[in-house]
Length: 333
Ligand code: CP
Image (cartoon, rainbow, N blue to C red; front, side, top):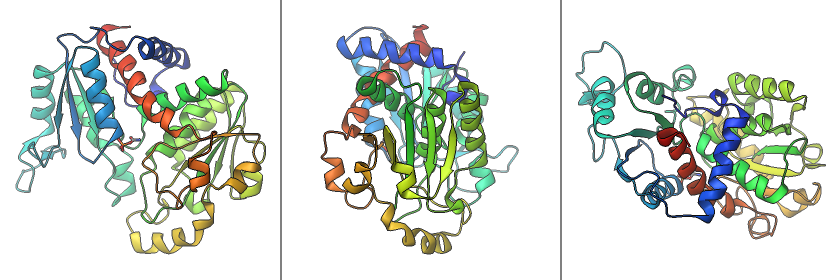
């Protein structure tokens, strides 16, 4: 039984097979590939694209999706082992994972970090506990990485640029009024490095570097592909020569758990917005973002409305790649 928790557990060839089958499903939308299959979609956090694309995708393949929001329309869950459950949670992950495994053929989970304790958050305990106790495949709908977004991102880049090997890929930090999750940023450097691109990470200062775990994984992927991995804080140098610009905002890991101190640093960096002037420095790059995006905060109207912006295409590809992924996990296709 295979899980889809991080793309690092999958070879590039196996990921490419999912992308290739997604291209087929994009042309032939309705097929009975998931007939009589049921999927539990557990959302511990809000969503628009992920919820709609999973629900509709499963329906289009003849399957059935059950959407649950633990703590809201389902009981709150305890993840601490060997604990006396005197607090809010009504049931333990050991029972939840086993019961859902009996009802459903696959469990997909969205569980963001809590932004209190960095080490605890980066253990990714919620999804790893599901993987530990469930007896059906587990799919990550965004925790500390966002692998389904990675698949949609790469499919979109391939549709626009063809072979990605050797392309110059820029992940730029952008300002946002709140300290956001690093998941999409972690995922961006993992998948760009795995697919053979030269990866550059632009952020305001070393305080905004991503977690060492993901930097090391991306560097290793680049070493294996004989490509370059670099980190810069120089905006002009970063944009120059880029073929792809991907933008994401995230909170500084240095001030993790201290939102007040973190916000003082973050508010100094509003000029990291992606605008037309910066895009002119690139090698006619395409631009994308996972969405949701605050216009004229993270990227200007001019960038979002430009022909080179492929964010909508990436969002729509979520459904196709997820249909392909579920078919792979449940049918071996
Ligand atoms: N990109 C993405 O996962 O969007 P949602 O948060 O709306 O699901």
